[in-house]
Image (cartoon, rainbow, N blue to C red; front, side, top):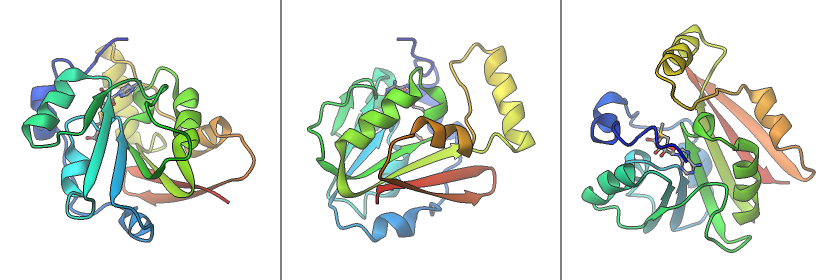
Amino acid sequence: MKDDFKFLANYYDKLIHTQSNFMWSEVIDRVESDILLDVGGGTGRIIKQLSHRFKSSINCDLSLPMLKIAKSKGHLDGICCSSEYLPFESNSKKIVIMVDTLHRLVEPKKTLLEILRVLTKDGVFIIEEPNIEKWQIKIISLIEKLFHMQSKFYNYAEIIEMINIPGIEITPIYLGNNFSLVINYS
Ligand SMILES: C[S@@+](CC[C@H](N)C(=O)[O-])C[C@H]1O[C@@H](n2cnc3c(N)ncnc32)[C@H](O)[C@@H]1O
């Protein structure tokens, strides 16, 4: 699989602005769990921000250079794997996040269903993505295409369509140029 982040890894944290609070912070605070699973966690940018909240955080990412940066920051629980095949038992993780990653996936639907396999029935899965309805994101999408990066941004309806299975509740949150989906079993 192509690793778009091989050369970006060293600069990633400097290029991407990290908010001090996430639009879904209150949602995960309502779920009792000491463990966080971050799918496509990259340099551990989000894990670092949430380190006060969890005893341990697992970062599953296919880019070894990104995981190495995370490790250099002290995030030792990194697993180099593809999000389509997570090395966890079914029904075993209570809080799963996937930030800024869905649009990078070659097989987004497969990943979403894989995360739902791993998610506990009382757990929560958060997706945060750039909002492709905004012109700023349309420009980013164009630039990424020019650089031949693997990316396809999805809107809310397209993501819902991918998670087309019964017994799932999906609540959107919109903020600025991003949006999040709070996903759980109903
Ligand atoms: C834009 S970065 C986001 C990193 C992190 N979530 C953040 O917000 O800082 C996207 C990440 O997804 C990872 N990624 C892309 N495709 C993947 C896949 N199929 N399985 C696991 N990770 C993947 C990349 O290696 C990269 O680290």
